[in-house]
Image 1 (tube, rainbow, N blue to C red):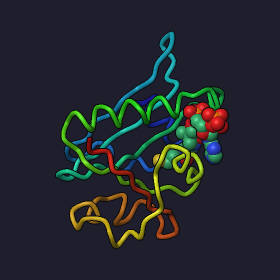
Image 2: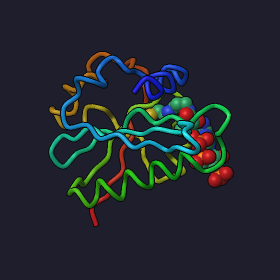
Image 3: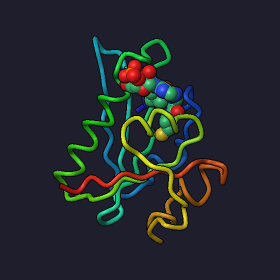
Length: 135
Ligand SMILES: CC(C)(COP(=O)(O)OP(=O)(O)OC[C@H]1O[C@@H](n2cnc3c(N)ncnc32)[C@H](O)[C@@H]1OP(=O)(O)O)[C@@H](O)C(=O)NCCC(=O)NCCS
């Protein structure tokens, strides 16, 4: 966990609610004991909040970010999640390439809007994006 926190903090992503978040899954990409990337999913019924995606600064643009998103999408689909939602300040083009579309955050479920990321951790200027993943 210290390495995960350090990676997220270096990427300027929120960590304040990582321990307290309910129904959270975290995937790690490691090589030779080094943490190269992390991604997490917070579940709200059939919606999932894709969050905490970061790759180590020396390991970017090598396909690791895409690989982490693909793995999360596959596992989320298997778990019955139908739609992924995220907030981002810096990676809109990255997610657009992966099929995510910008949506108005008012179109997100009430439960998801009550998450710490939506309520307080991500600034109102963060872009909200979503992707349907049901088969
Ligand atoms: C966003 C982030 C996870 C991308 O990770 P990455 O390992 O560099 O991504 P990949 O190497 O898999 O890139 C996949 C594609 O997206 C492109 N890409 C990567 N980062 C990009 C960005 N910020 N803007 C536009 N395109 C980007 C890559 O060039 C690549 O395209 P290609 O296949 O045509 O060459 C990484 O830059 C990061 O950790 N950023 C800081 C934290 C952050 O913003 N997280 C997202 C908020 S949830």
